[in-house]
Structures are given as C-alpha cells and as structure tokens.
Amino acid sequence: MKKKLLSLLVAAFLLVLMVSSVSAVDLKNLGVGYYDSGLSIKYALSKELSVQGILAGGFLGAKANYNLQNNANYNLYGYAKAGATSASFTIGAGAGVEYYLFKALDLSGPKELKNIAFMLDLGLSYTSYKQVSSLYKIEPDIGLDLGIGLHYYFK
Image (cartoon, rainbow, N blue to C red; front, side, top):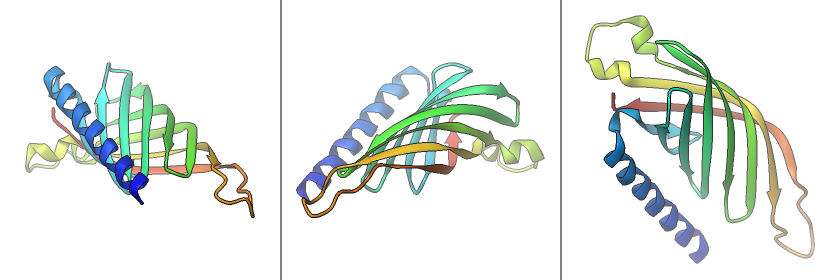
C-alpha cells in the first residue's frame, strides 16, 4: 500500500512539473483531459510530433504521437507508448484519430468548444507481470489495445 501511495504521489508531482515547465514554453500547444479512465496531459512539440503523459489509477505512462495526416478538423496519427503499474510493465504501438467535432460541425456558441478534441486509437500491446508468489507464475500478455480520450487545447 505504501509503495502504491508513493508511486501515485511521485506521478502527480511529475505531472505538475511537466505542466509548469510547459506553461513557461507555450500554452497554445498544451492539451489537458481524459484518456483511458485517467488524467492526460498532451503537448505538441511540432506539427507532426506530440507527447502525452497518462495517469490512470495506479498506471503511469507516456505516449508519443506522430501525425500522419493533419486536417483542420482531425489528425490521423501513429503512436508508441510505455507505462507501468506496481505489478506490470506495458509497451505498445498503433494508430488513431483525433477529431475536433465542434470545429467540424461549425456550430455557433462558445469558441472554446472548438478546442475540444476526441481521440480514439487501436493498437497492440505487450504486458509483462512481476511474479507475485512462488505458487503461480503469471505469463506475459499480448493483446489489442483500445484507447479513448478527450482533450481541451489552450489555443
């Protein structure tokens, strides 16, 4: 329990440091939101490349997205990610789409709605587990990885 609490506190501290260092650089490239039932912070390093920090429950991870196609209303991207919990380590890769629904519909209303993007990605992941007990061994797992998220961009 103490290790999980310490891991959570360290992860929260790292996310705060990441946000504070990013805010000194350029807020218009920053997105904050939800990804896979947890907190997500995404920062565009360039038009093609962005990095994303993910904190979901006991999971702490990072994801690199490379835009394959940029459009005013959507981005198609490939990604690679890695993350860990206290009992496992995961790596994965895949592709996805980030869609600005309110911008695409061109609805009248608050302009902030046009800064909200929905994301959906699909890929493969490999997870290795620590051996919890000498009585049984958990085998590594390879499977499909589905990610769903929502970000607000400070544009």
